[in-house]
Length: 301
Picture 1: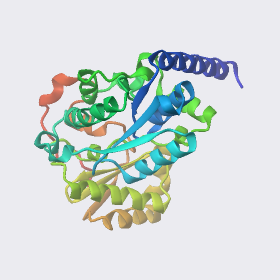
Picture 2: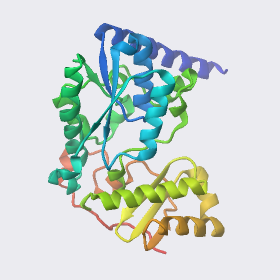
Picture 3: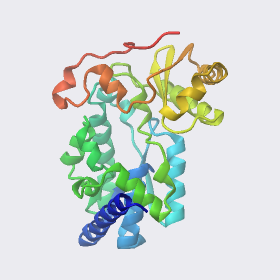
Picture 4: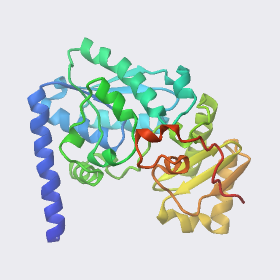
């Protein structure tokens, strides 16, 4: 191990020790648990710090929650002894959410915490935490406001954990999500202003599942632009799937999900690319009036 790697390891490990102390000072915690990299790590550390009796990981299930991620959440919970409670959320029936404004996530998280907190409190868990990390605070995340309004704490962010730290410590602990690509809710694939419907979410989910079966690895997004699907792939995957045979296979797989046209974005995967298209980016809540761009900037064949 190089000196630089050793320093980084020590820094992440120091933060983990601080996290263990933070959790022990609270005694019992309920974790908003999606099965993503951050919440999986937080839940596993919480079980070590507090014991299974001191932790409750709560999964909110809805049409916007990918089935593959639910399976990952359950697998991690089973392997690491994390107690789980599943609840149903119904954000799609909130017209403010379904309209898909730039602050859509605020309404989603409001629905989640409104349902999750009473379940946690009824079971004796007064402290509720989520997996927000320090990197998240540099992006436009309206869902974080809902967490603050419901007194949900974010210890990973408070203690300075970056995504790299979390992946590093997850790998050291053998948590399989350490190398899992980020996977936000399926609604994030729809441009702002395009109504969120069960049918559109299912179309995206099926398309991405087909691409995974095809062998697409790394970060992947199928962005829904009406009849057109814009496929974003990681930089490592682009050359392979932009080759004629690969591109044809991608088109066939995504068309099978019901899209008439399929384009592979030559710029590759970009986290928050819909924010960029909508003019939100890092400008924060003041950009909420940015116009929707349902079909803007879609590459053509």
